Length: 213
Length: 218
Image 1 (spheres, rainbow over the protein chains, first blue to last red):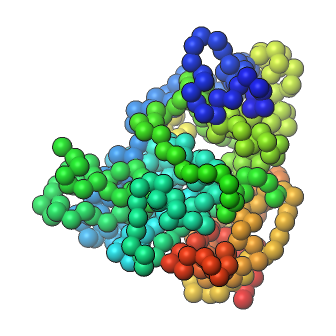
Image 2: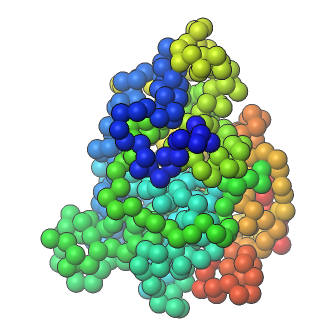
Image 3: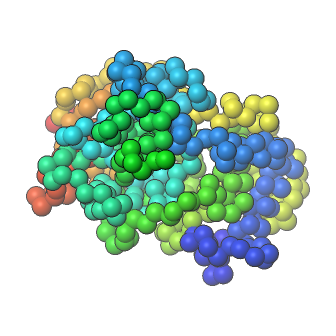
């Protein structure tokens, strides 16, 4: 499908209209065969898709970050064992056994990548964005992270340590960004609105108080 | 294997371009591919490292031009064929021609949350933990023809063990059907100049998660 000269839909904008692409046809054939052989149940596929479309997103992670910003003992346990700390909140399904939270400080900025495939903390951040899975990000994040940050409109102080975590095994990382100034009396729920997906990958920063309604 | 999937440090791919208001899926078939992958994984048809290895074995030009979910679909086709779950004739016909092989279980709507939870990769240790945080290690200069999780840009380099994540199933063995072969897993951190030479950004540090067989004491 990928080499086919009329199906370069990797830019995602060619596949509209009624004509079925070769990819669609092949995926449909695969699903039909796997279903008829008894391996899969299409209604289970529907439920999985619905969950990713409606339930599993970066809000899961944002709530964790906001809790860490307001509760020092939770923050301590999050940094010690993120799997256990997130599970204790009970707001989402199990995150597996291997979640690690890494803390941004005035001295250190963390960034997450997977150079070998596209490993990503799905349970806490939802589906990975296309750019995270793209060759530009996977190739440059470990060599020129400041250049990558620049692509996202971010310039860190020159002496800030930049730490890049290449997710080469089954450990998954989430960045605990710094709490924005001017939010001292904010509730956890309101704080979570400041926590962007990219701030938990390390390619962004949380919103400032003035940036949310 | 030394494939194009191992992209860390390559130049020439251009800027990172984020799409504003990106939808969960760009076409319905992408969701079907993702969900089929989850369902087949839950069923025990193959392991995640079989999927990764199947993608790595795609022709380099295909790997680079296919979209993410196209690569998943191509890898799934390879795995169902190579592992004997489906025949080429069936894929071509778009219908089953014979009954399926038995699988350990099947993902049905009532067990969706179990099917979507990440399984544990911890395994019983087979030997003592060789390194501890603070130890200096050198990664091996290895170039296996099969699946490995030691990226090229970190081979033969000196780093420091920062964390031990316990004992995990070993992808290099799993992907080649040689069993879990559990190994200790460590976060190893490198100075940028060790990886990228004297002109590298001195404020940069990079870590990988490395299985014990990838490491020698330094």
